[in-house]
Amino acid sequence: MRIDVVTIFPDYLAALDLSLVGKARRRGLLDLRVHDLREWTTDRHRTVDDTPFGGGAGMVMRPDVWGRALDEVLGDGADAEPDEAPGATLILPTPSGEVFTQRHAEELASAEQLVFACGRYEGIDARVAEHYRSTGLDVRELSIGDYVLNGGEVAALVMIEAIGRLVPGMVGNPESLVEESHGAAGLLEYPVYTKPPRWQDLEIPEVLLSGHHARIERWRRDQALRRTAARRPEMIAALDGEALDKHDAAL
Ligand code: 6GU
Image (cartoon, rainbow, N blue to C red; front, side, top):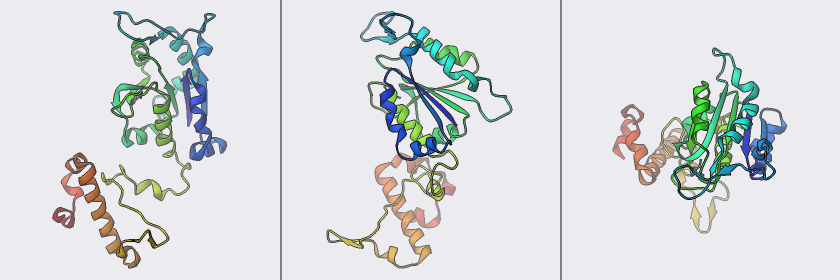
């Protein structure tokens, strides 16, 4: 997979040299490139923004600078064969976007190229999204949650980590991908424990020492259901009836 990030703060993305994402880069599974938007400015001051038409506070990022940057960065990803794997997807991190979920991560993990256009100030001129959509490109305006950040860089980091860990070969143990919160079960993960068996006067649940696989599975499912009901009741409401077994219903 190729990932490009265009930003006026390339240093924000330094964290992508670390952890699983960094390892995937070094192993050649992930071709990740970070670009400074100012490379595509043409004036002495390297201006990327201007005042909003219609008035109001703050500054808006200029479409001409973004257009030159994105035309170049989209490059070879933009002309993938229609019957092949999906080609380039342009992601515009914005608090006004659709909320990014594990479903988006799963879908985007099979893209050939992802290009993140990180806006600052009051955002990017709306014609940028409109223009690239009109060229037939897959354009996603995505938010990482209901709060406001100063720019798209941290949101891009979040999405790249969530997507990157689903790229085949990136996670050491593929089993850890299936049994996780926000996975297929539609439930939060059950609590986990390790050694020592007694710590700060706290013992681990006895069932986990029983060696009784079926009982352990039942306990974990109960815990996941209780935890989800308490913390994320809307996820319980969204479960389809067939996802619940007889024992679940009794909880
Ligand atoms: Cl994607 N960008 C900004 N600036 N703020 C956000 C966000 C994105 N998602 C949540 N808040």
